Image 1 (cartoon, helix red, strand yellow):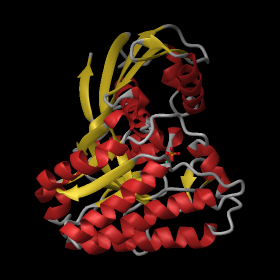
Image 2 (spheres, helix red, strand yellow):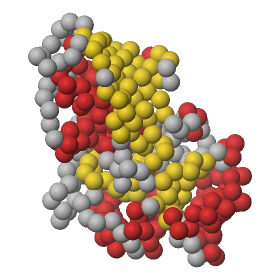
Image 3 (spheres, rainbow, N blue to C red):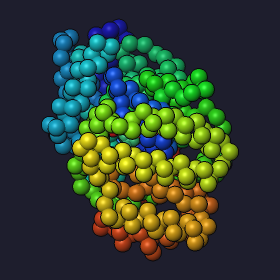
Image 4 (tube, rainbow, N blue to C red):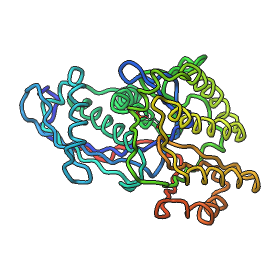
Length: 353
Ligand code: PMV
């Protein structure tokens, strides 16, 4: 145990899920993305993780108990154990402690919402806090950059969850400040209309996905459209930076919907192709587009790697959009479930003992 280290303690972080406006789909090397992605961090869909550490002795192995909602979960324990083992070379202090990780989500377990972004970002932040205790202090910028890099190694999209607001992961042509290794908060000013954006998550199905995102990313390796897709994502990212600065809602809607449908188009045109959306997903999309056209309200949708629909809209239309969801869309949701979320401020340290 190093001089500054503590014998035991507990660190807790809360970290959000995020919704990608420009999608990460296709990776290479050690969890590097083939294109830049850009997301909005959420406010209420979060994971809360605590890391308890108790000095055991210096040996070479990770000694971990992983609990989800207070219950031991061998499947997650194995995945997190592997993740921590892969970090040992750079974070040897992890093997000096008996570790208990206890994690829970604020969103319902059966909602079909991917929790890997919030889960790995919360865990990465706990590891970084332990690093500060065991090895050395560091400034905020370095702390969050390294946390983002660590989160990325667990799940690519998690790299973007260590910041609030809008976040970019991956180098962008003509913008020197972004990186492939870690995500960064957007450097440019955000137009007021996008500063208070909402995301209503319509739960179409809470079932587990037939094809997970790791398998989906792999199918991009031999995808006939891969090259043009990566260029399209680059162009969309550059344009989205401008859109978020100028408040151009029309262009925002066009890019966001194109990204969502492209993601699912890529899945369908993979070999083997597969379909994650359901008939209700399509019906919801049709109704959103009709509502936008008839009511002249700038509401749009995006999709994750699943059938649920994220409805994105500006705060000034909140009353109207909630009414629209309740009157016309809830009937298409699984048990009427939807989550009323919005842009969030990013992770929060809850406790350090
Ligand atoms: O982070 P992963 O490996 O679960 O991939 C996430 C991919 C999408 O959610 C579909 C898109 C994205 O950029 O978040």
